[in-house]
Image (cartoon, rainbow, N blue to C red; front, side, top):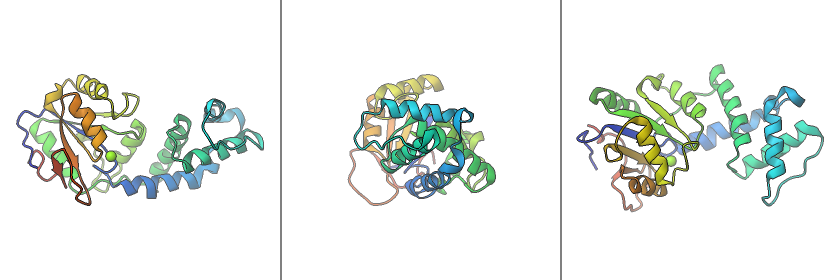
Length: 234
Ligand SMILES: [Mg+2]
């Protein structure tokens, strides 16, 4: 579909599968953090994340939890590797990964990836006075690092705000209402792009306009489909 800027005052973008290949997360970011875990998880009280990991471990009632053996650092490393292997949504894991990625970007070993149609889309937003913002389950820190270091340069000047799951789940309409309020844009004037139908459903439930971003394949959709951003605000 083609969406003009008529009646649109804000554009809200999902990251994985929408602005950025899903493979960037699974084939680049996750392995990078996994390989450097031991380097970054320190000894005793010097590392505040150790306490966070231990608290989560003690509260974890889930199946398959490994034993906590060989001291605080070894116990934490074993548990963090378990959380990574089982792709668990863990605050402690996200904190540690965030720290590792931040250093990776600083060293220039990591560069953010966006599809080539993303920078021109953000330029059209700016030219047309449409606010652009991000809503991703990756932390706000991870989002800012990604968009600061893309092959097209630092895209942060084009982005008004970043939202992560602290705003609420991406499948809850209230999250989108909060984002509209935070941006000062009425929900019907906010366009949300994502590759995930459950997120589109929630956004539509809050009154947003939505487009289903399908980067590969051609499965049917009950939402307006785009294969690139070329027809958005164009
Ligand atoms: Mg996505």
